[in-house]
Length: 317
Image (cartoon, rainbow, N blue to C red; front, side, top):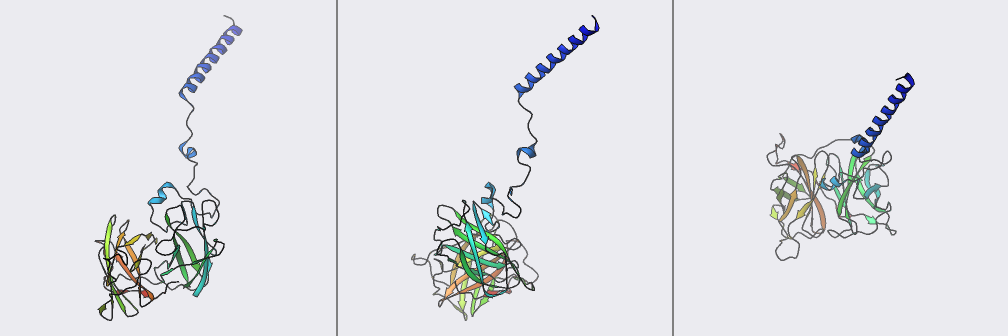
């Protein structure tokens, strides 16, 4: 066989091989893209720089208050920095899934929205109820603020949605003077003594009993506040996760006594220390008793667990 004939035969053979390989490859399917490319190669926050993180299916498992945006709703502060002082104005909006402000809310515990503010060292706790503008776009209130980094929590239920607690950081200008909420099961506030009984157990409900006395005598005529004889907020030390705490009983139900004991059930997700803040009303004034406790079996601190904690007197706004 001469050379030209040999080259022609070789080319025909190669063409046959490539044809067979191509057919086999299509039968088996295309080669998969790398895993990173298949998933976008990025994080869940795929928006513009500085945009709040988008919620994911796993967000429902997180404690409240850790995210500024969740389930299509966003807590948008009008200003992320402000001055220190008393009665400092604070404004914000709750933006809904359509990008516009939410205007319809379901009343929960007598209010459409609860705003909690606390400095990141757990000092300066306040629980207020902002006013909604006539156009339903902006919430506004005032807070007593000291220099430092604060966390504000909006606790609400938008119409047609589940209850949410969103959190945002607020920077307050000035010279920061750090403090700490010391381990305590007893709080003194305005002549009242409040004691805490019960232990926090991670992963399950914990029964907590808070007993109120005045000048050594049990208080048996507490007044309803937010549909209960007390309202308790729990915040995890470190990240300030906002935890749901449920009161036991309802005023006027025929069995719940107006003091001295107020019972709550708390569920904490992890070992650690938690700040507990009890609002109770007596003689027409809302007062706040503050505690710091560790989960069961965890050492409190060298100071012990019987030292009095911070206390404050913030009337409802």
